[in-house]
Image (cartoon, rainbow, N blue to C red; front, side, top):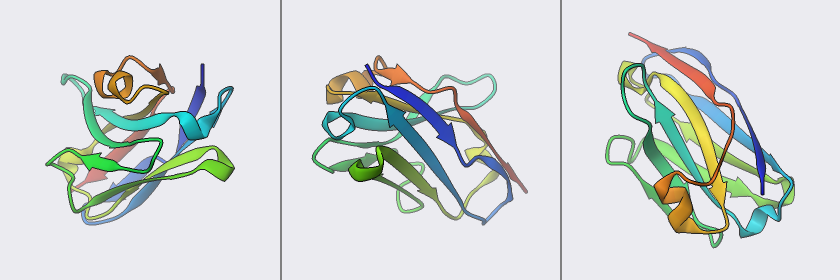
Length: 121
C-alpha cells in the first residue's frame, strides 16, 4: 500500500497559479495510477485529473485546459499544475493512488491528508 502526502496549497488570487505535489512512499510508485480529487465545503469529492502508470491522462471538463497532471517516477511524486485559477476551484485537494486505475477512478485507493487551495476573487 502506498502512503501519500500532499503539499503546495495556499491562497491565490483569481487568475493565478499553484503547483500541488503528492509525495509517495511504501510501494512501487511507478506501477500506481494517480488521481487528484478535490472537495469543496458542502459538496462531494470530485475527480479532477488522473494519470495512469503508463502516463495517459484525463481531466474533468471543469479544469481541462487549465490544469495539468504529471508524475516523476524517479522522485516518487505526482503533481497538479493549476493555472487560470477561479474562485470555484477553492477546495481541499487530495491525491489518490492504486495499482488499479479503476480503483483510483472509484476513489477506493490510498488517500493523502489533503492540501487546502483557496482562490480569492
